[in-house]
Every structure is written in C-alpha cells, then in structure tokens.
Length: 118
Image (tube, rainbow, N blue to C red; front, side, top):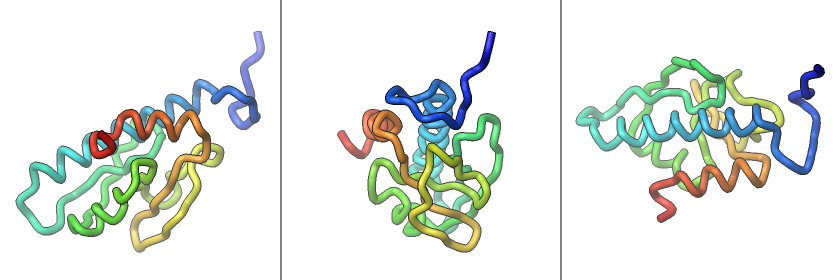
C-alpha cells in the first residue's frame, strides 16, 4: 500500500488539506467565543492554524482581531504555522500572520462554518 503525497495537486482536495481546514475553522470558533466572552482590552487568542494539536497563543486587541476577521476566509496564525498548499499569507504583523485559503473546497468550508456569513 502506498500513501498519497500530501503535496501533490489533484482536482479534489486531499484529505489532509480538509483536516487542516477543519482545524483552522475550529480555532476560529474558539477565538470567536473568546472575543464574545472577554472583558479585557487585549484577550489571548489561539492560533487558527491547521496543525493538529497546536496550542500557540497570541495577545491581540479586539480591533486587531476584527481586522483579521474582515472576511470569512481570513485566519490568524502564528509565524511558521502557515501551511503551504493550504494557506496564502496576505498580511504579516508582529507576532502573527493573516492567511487565506488557497483552494476552493477549503474556502467553501470556511464560508459554510462562518457564523458571520449567515
């Protein structure tokens, strides 16, 4: 039995890319809850990367997080946590990056899961 090359391109998104996108979506859900429940000016948000088990955190102001969340396919990640083939870095800041989804299926997953898109 051979395993699929996780970096190969196909018309259908590879299962590992779907898992990465799902992990990013879960991170965003956590951050949305943090934002709703915060009373301080600079809450601690979790990295929204697709690396399963990532526990990295970043302190941001609410306006800074809102800037990340200006569209459904934008995610907050710690530098070095962006995933080639899944993410495209669109902004670089001190301590965090903003990435967007490269592939149509990942974008669709992000849009379907985004409470703000409803």
